[in-house]
Image 1: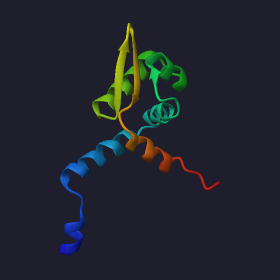
Image 2: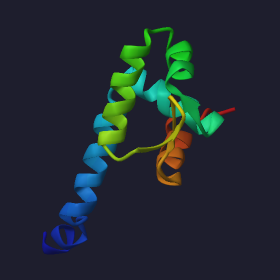
Image 3: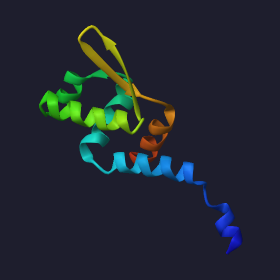
Length: 101
């Protein structure tokens, strides 16, 4: 049992995984992450259009993903553009949405 215990990831790694899986537990957030993986960057109004929701709802999901440190953003005048913070989310999504051909 000590070998199994020693092989467990440390608390920091587990916390990062917990955050990622919490974000992936919502269909709208999954759609946003997938759209950002494909397009690399979207503004709030584009995310709302992709989801078919009001801008406020899209903004809520984007804020949650940003708070979870999965997204980064940049301001361009009055518009805010979002993108994936790093490639690890994209890699997980590739596995999640992989098909068996």
